[in-house]
Length: 261
Image 1 (cartoon, helix red, strand yellow):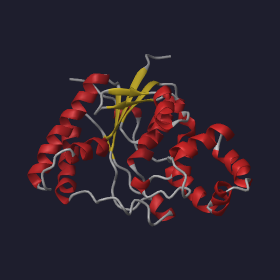
Image 2 (cartoon, helix red, strand yellow):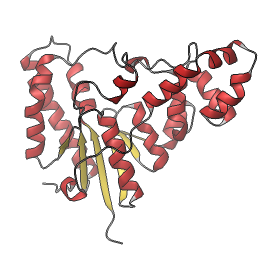
Image 3 (cartoon, one colour):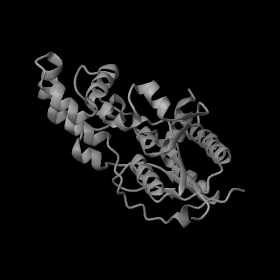
Image 4 (cartoon, one colour):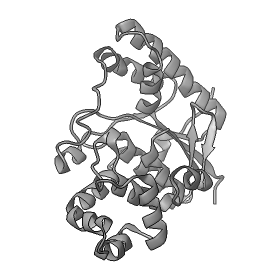
């Protein structure tokens, strides 16, 4: 076996938007250019901190994706990306390319799907460790498969123990948890009146979402009634929070190889 590699998957817009929104200034071209300068530094810092052999820099392509086709109200409550930032992004992508990164944005899917596909493929091929730089909770499911999550803004690792502490369930149950409780930021409905604690309690008692539906879903209680009445919404929520693992990335590992300065 050749020397083990290290894949760093960067959730590009997660960094860009957080940096942009940290500034209280009104939207403007100047605000966008300053934010993207800081975001570029963030990318450099993440690369220096982890010294990867391969980098997958993923961005949302924009426009509707497969989740909107499933549920037209998906993300309808989210504020659109400010125009000055959206217009400055192509130039930012070009800057990343000049720094030796291969930027990936795939139509009809989200950056999460691109990252999940790449990371799972890397791990299944036994190529070495995989790190995901993000604060997005959906991507923490990858911890169940051997990846680690790096929160650039807090400079902290997220592992199995972190997920259990934060969400009350093991990483492999995270998507079942999000399906039950919903995710208001993405407009995922979930089951009414089920919050994180109730969802975690149900999953830890029954072991999986299917088992919750089979067990708690027959209880003659208000909770059992809601689970029965909202079964279809729950199934759709489960689809919305799941990650696509078969995205055609159109790249080889050689194309994602990274040489540090």
